[in-house]
Amino acid sequence: MDANTKEIRRSLRSVRSSIRGKVHKSVYVRVDNICRMVEILLSRADELGVGSHDMHVLSRTATDYLPSAIRPYLALPREFAERLPQADGRTAIQILCSQLDVMYAQLWQVYDSVMRRDGDRLLAHERFLTDKFGGNPLQIPPDPPGTGHRAGSTRRDRRQGPDSPRSEDWDAVENLIRAGIRQLAEIVRARRNK
Image (cartoon, rainbow, N blue to C red):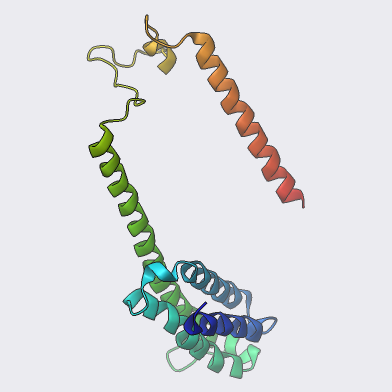
């Protein structure tokens, strides 16, 4: 972990502890979302590049923009911040939330950029594999012309032919899928009950 990464993490901890129990929920949620997004992106810092614009946005948001927005807000009495309008007619909480939304939107653009690069790498690898080995032999060919969807037919009905999988094979696949869905539902229920 380099010095910049440590500084970013330290700043996030400081911001979180400075607002705990001192701000309205709308502020807390926004700050927490920003901190989580920074942490997600920080785990991919190598991909952002040390001197890149994206890394600059990430670093400055965590170490400067976010703390600089929070400090003056925390200096105000909470009742004043939440109720009394400022010079532009908005309350301090509205002004802060607007600033936090701008920061989150900027971080989201960085996140989107990282995800798009991942998608581009995935597509490039698919092109490489296709060039190297040819098309996907497991790909199900489209229905022949003139055999389109008939009212009341199922996908299985349309695929039945001399070389098609037997009905029992499809039933086994459907049963496996249903069992997997039931297992996932049980896991979700168990986690919710914890």
